[in-house]
Image 1 (cartoon, helix red, strand yellow):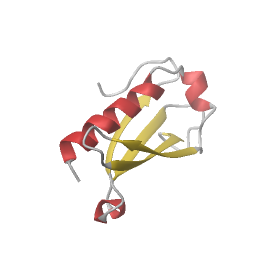
Image 2 (tube, helix red, strand yellow):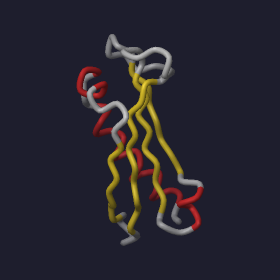
Image 3 (cartoon, helix red, strand yellow):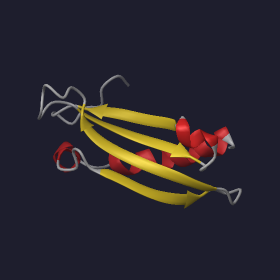
Length: 95
């Protein structure tokens, strides 16, 4: 897997939910989106986006969004990932 290209694809995909509001993201809690994207090199990448409470003991708290990416090879067992956390005030945490 081309790690540089995979990272680019993952960042492009994580930027899509980053544009959503906290309210929209919180509606997606416990949902998982899976799809494929073809990179510039022609490699097919499998992506999974997960939405969850950052602290399961605090529903309606911070939302964590994960993007996992692999090329279907051995990386499927240990995918690369990108994530962000957004507070209920709509501020990104840890950036």
